[in-house]
Amino acid sequence: MINKRTIYFSLFIALLIGISYIMNWEMAIANFAEKGTLPTFDDPGQRILIIVPHPDDETLGMAGIIQRAVELKRPIKVVIVTSGESYKKAAMSFCGKTNPTPQDFYRFGLARQQESIVAMRVLGLPRQDLIFLGFADGSIRFLWSQYWDNGRPRVSGGIHVAYAPYDTVYKPGIPYTGRNLVDELTEIIKDFKPTDIYYPLADDMHPDHWAVSNFVRYTITAVNINVREHMFLVHHPQWPVPWMAEKNRPMLPPVDMKDSNTEWQSFDLTPKEIDLKQVAIKQYRTQIDVMEPFLMAFVRKTELFATKPVITIPVVDSKPDLQSRALPHTLLKVYTGGMLNEEIYRSAALTRLGAFYYDNKLYIGLESARPISKKVIYHVEMRLFYKDQNDIKRIDLGIVDEKLYQYKRAENSLTDVIAAKPIINGNKMWVEVKIPQVNNLRYIFMGADSIYRNRLIDKIPWNMYKIGE
Image (cartoon, rainbow, N blue to C red):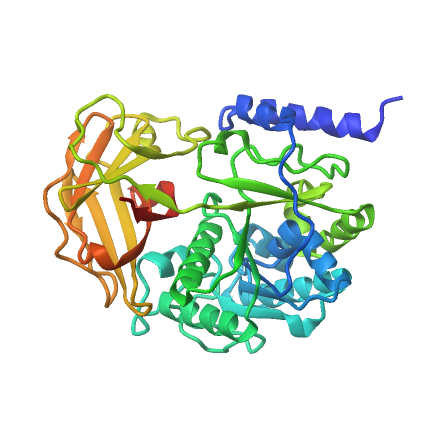
């Protein structure tokens, strides 16, 4: 007799075959077949702060951590940055309309908040330890890159407002700006004084996830607090597989992230914690209605966390050949599979980042899967943290039609740092930047992305760098 597991797996394989034209079949199979063990930890922390983008992320990533902390009577707070109200497919199912109104999205956001409250109650966390910030779902990357200063909020989300519209949130009515989000995170961190912070991994493909990751790491660095950082992953191509609960299978990293400057650890769950995690996930009824198999894929016998070591940019005595076939001083390699099949998209598929410091200048190199295209806009963005804790600057560069531009996107933007036009050779480009006050520089927080027809196509995940000796 064929059991349900066999039937589900057969359906899963059939689904993979059916959509293989947009998926990397080999990567899905590789992730499914991945074996191995990871370093483990069993102490969730003495004072635990969890920061996530949407209602349900806290349970998908940290249900075991939350249960263990509650059992050990450790202080724990869960912060949810958005209310997830702009997920149109789920909102349509929730309100029964093809075109939900702003009021429908508002009610949907309240429903998602309530789902988190119920799920946390299942895990033993009381309502007073759950904090909603009420920023707009789908907006966080824009606050990170363009809408930073408080005089310029972004109108965002299905509700289509420029401020937090809920009276259930940490600061009702707060305008949607990057500065305000940093201020709220700073206030919570300073007040709670965590020993451990759990937050998204910058490699996550969902813009809200990687942007929240950037905001949290930025805030931790700006506050200069000594904490253990634990980063979790939710959205990554062809991962996790299979899309079903596998209580005897560990959660393992995607196979394509082995060169991504990521160090992984596992947190083992007890059978009771696994079962209760599954019960908690089912409380997110608006999400179960539209993507239950994906959510169930996070029911595993372990939870997966990562750290991101600071990357050292080498100081070199001689300038390497920037026209060489290989990218000199490659520091990061990133995943290039998935849906980027058309030639123009392959030009926007970023594969490597390199950097070195020579003759008082920082050289930053990008490599794409196909030759650099004039139809694609490439961005390199930096946040500069100086030894004076209050001194943070930003640099925002754009390569448009093979010309280099510098943008003033915030009051602390530097716009006079360019030393030369970009050097472009096939699928590689280099920009040369004069960083001010290098001797007083602590860290460079840096990422890159590519835009085609006003759409974000690909990115180099943000990492923390320092200029070495």
